[in-house]
Length: 147
Image 1 (cartoon, one colour):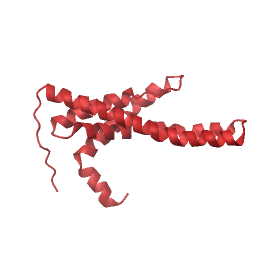
Image 2 (cartoon, rainbow, N blue to C red; image 1 turned 90 degrees about the vertical axis):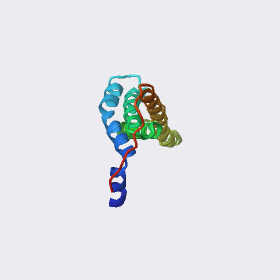
Image 3 (spheres, one colour; image 1 turned 45 degrees about the vertical axis):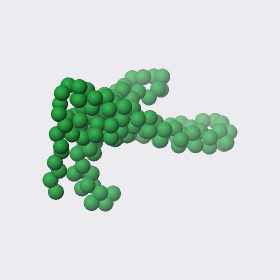
Image 4 (cartoon, helix red, strand yellow; image 1 turned 30 degrees about the horizontal axis):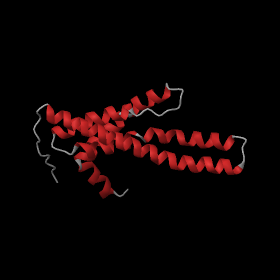
């Protein structure tokens, strides 16, 4: 990333909320998935972080759905840490070559789908958080960004 892109992301309140909430969801996401032997990926940590980020964003006049979507995408990054282990496991199995190739291709399709799924869950949770902020009577206050 270029320095101007990084500076633009730092000055964007939407990205700031999403980044902080997404990173805050890492420990909960890792803990929930570490304890689950079934292998089903749990996105409740991402949903909870996106709900809180959407609530706070709406209180400060931001669009809660976009904050939640970005929080979900960032919060899904721990799933990428397991990809090298899965590829190593697949390559170590005694199976036909075509099945190994198919397994790696399926993994290449599955990982982006999981990130997208977490982003959509984040968007829905962020919207719910924004709705809760609006229902609790917090007025929309415009965010002022100093240059």
